[in-house]
Image (cartoon, rainbow, N blue to C red):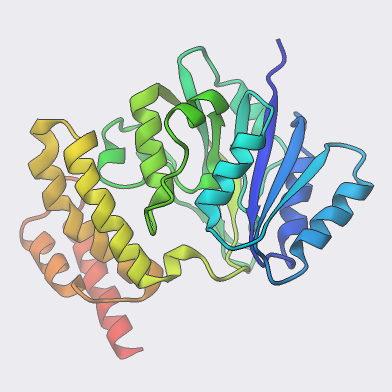
Length: 295
């Protein structure tokens, strides 16, 4: 039986890059049955560009759902998933991309107990180079309790009924909505993984939530508490709690350039390294903090 896939693309002020995302979905070797673009109250003509592509598309039907007011990408994804007709939802951020074999490769990993399938991600530096971040770490079933080992939304394909049953993305979280979703999926069934770098993360669009330090801190603090109370087994709570300050310091330093709390967390981990880190990672965090201080 053929697997039906709906691609859901949330977009806000992405006129410069949304064409690339739509093209990635439109040229898959395994074609989705539809592409749904949810325009999150954009101020630019991104929706117009998407509509123009839809008008001339001979491959995959493109639907555009315009929202009157900005409500955030998690809300837009929820709206797109609710409107989708496919059995599976392939999430694609408007400033990311896919290899043309992405959907075909992930379908091969599906089984009756699988609720989501992920590919590895390549981070492109805009200079012809790139790094893979999420590969082998994802094989640790407990790793997701410590950090987001699966990556961003564009790496994921989710069984639509499961997505709806667990309530979609939590729009109340100011950040970490994807990590929270992966934890809910982990409880709902099995997550299958491909270590092929089939998802492409670009740095050419700007205005990503990870650049907002206040949202990053608040979202992590809320999710950390949720992990300890709802997701983690009792015998893991203490170990996870010890890891969280170092993880937050790394996230702030590497993604937002904020070094508040970095020195203390790095020194603590240097003296008493957590099993999921190394003294080298603590030294790297200290060096990063020093560079940020001098910048």
